Amino acid sequence: MNSTPRGMRRHIAILGETNSGKSALFNAILGVEAAIVSDISGTTTDPIVKPMELLPYGPIILIDTGGLGDETALGEQRVKRTRETLSGVDFALYTVDVRSFDEDIYKEMRTVFESQSTPHMVVFTKKDALEMSDIERIAHFSKKYKNTYVVSVKDEASIGELLARMSEALEKLAAISDFNPVSIAPVGGVAVMVSVIDSEAPAGRLILPQNQFIRKCLDDGIRVNCTTPEQLLTVLRESARVDIVVTDSQAFKEVAEIIPDNIPLTSFSILGAHEKGNLSVFIQGLQAIDKLRDGDRILIAEACTHNSTHEDIARVKIPALLRKLSGKTLEFEYRSGRDFPDNLLSYSLVVHCGSCNLTRRETLERMQRVTKAGVSITNFGVLMAYGAGILNRATEPFIN
Image (cartoon, rainbow, N blue to C red; front, side, top):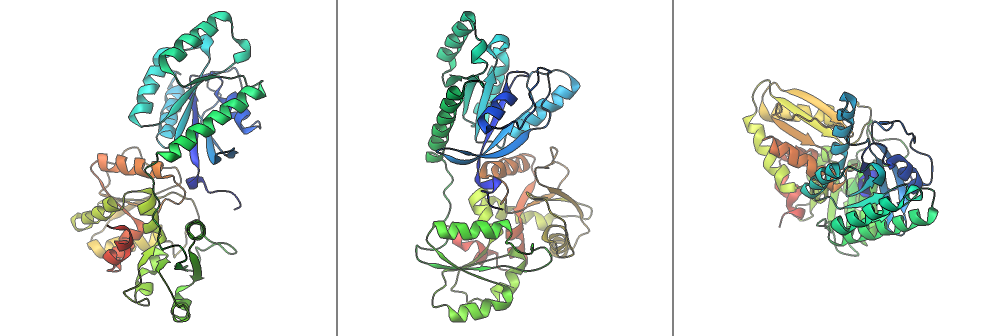
């Protein structure tokens, strides 16, 4: 509860051949023994994910992955999982044990890095065990490919220098990022946050989208009034100024009936759709509703995991709304967390959450996979606004 959420951290993956020193490097960067280190090939199976502070850059997610180049049946699964992990990361460290280095595997991975626009650094491990011939190979490779570094996990100075180079790389990445969060109100403005307190709202704390919204307002110099739908009218009467109202999507209809038309209205989910995805694609995805037929399969994807209730927006309210809008008998499949299907061809529509637990890169990668499969995709908030008859109003703050 006190740490920066996963979806707001840069993701760095450590990749490389089996036994190239990935897990040892992972532990050295973290400063703790978080991953098992062994000479046995294939020790790391599923990716290991750990949050950390990379100084002076800030909060990141560090990911240790399974080894590449393992040709066993289980090894193929590890490699597949590793490549899936890479699709959602912002930066990669490709580890190399120069004594058993396969340049063909690196060339293949370099092509993957470039195709996914993932910047990377080549890290030669086991510096303490290098021989003269190894040093010559490193020099030849570094001249050929650039952006290389040599470390030993037993040498704190070399790890410290690597961390500094990682921080510099991420600072450069931030400087050229195409992610430009929208300002929902001017500096000194006032936003009203409407939260639904129901069986899904955890006692004693705010849900993550609300938490992130408050922090966003504080960062942008915007004052925030927090209320519930039941108290919204009173808040409006007592407020001399309101620049925007942001609500839970499930309360769209109720809230829209209360606030005047001259006050902008949107939801946490639509804000997430704009900042982490492509809002116009989500809006276009609504066209699939009129084409739905009896028996069509709908995928509902949430980036978080939680227990569902009778008031659950993903498993209760959205399915009910889609049945009402389409007038069809539909089949629904639910995925949560990092679980997202490989094969998307069997779905007629994908409905995705606001991605508070995903990075923008992860969200866009999912959207790309869906559209590449020829399937329409929309967003929780976009769909709920459409169902409430206020889609134009709810998306107007983000449509030029």
